[in-house]
Image (cartoon, rainbow, N blue to C red):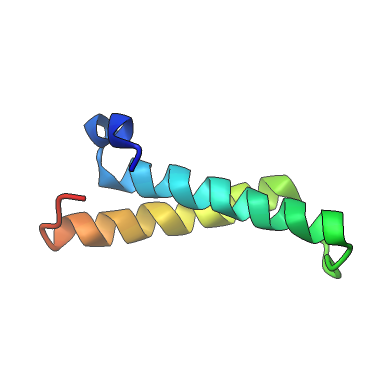
Amino acid sequence: MLDGLNKYGLPIKYAVLCMSGGIAVIFLANVFGINKGDATYLSAAIATGAGGAMGGWLRQSKGKKR
């Protein structure tokens, strides 16, 4: 999935995937009115992007290719 991001490395690929997922979750929470906190799109992008990059880095350090 998203093989075009493979040239940038696993941490970048995971960061992009998690960032888009985090933004989608905040969007859906706002649409359905279940967003009780003060979560914004920017904070979701930063938090999930950083978490995805760390997950990708850990996976890459274990020798995983995808």
